[in-house]
Length: 163
Image (cartoon, rainbow, N blue to C red; front, side, top):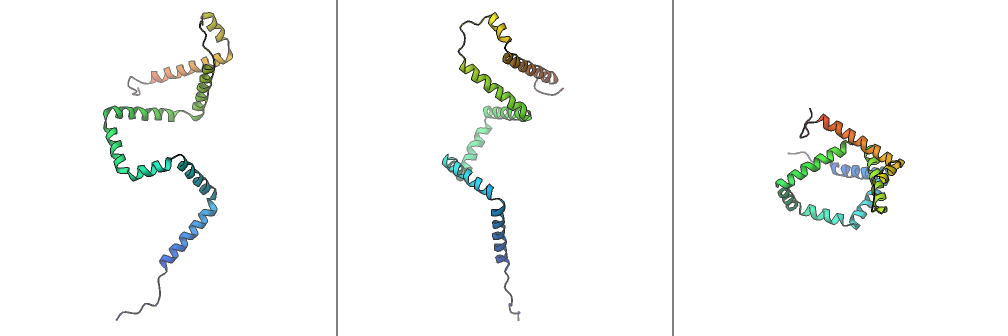
């Protein structure tokens, strides 16, 4: 005959205790992150992003089928390749350089929007404008940009292949 059972295995209870201890430890160590995550979830809910994500997940197969059908079209495929190339180019630019250029463009757009265009802008007006230190700085930036662009064009052949 078989021997009688004299001990009860407590493996599942130990796992539950371990999980509770891990949760308590995480509460203590990551409380700021948990609070920030809850605020983020609340903001996403208020802006309607969470319901949208929920709907996308629930209808995932249908959404993926439509997306894949769009991707297979030739006109979208070329655009996606261009977008990836553009993202790679932007990713290759040093962060500080991009921040400086974007701040300069933003400042230029603000100045252009707030200045009424002159009806008549002649050669002498242009020469007087070239004396402005801000204009000189911008022209220096543009000519440096053009020089770098020309150097890069000289380093590549038509079609973007390196020499």
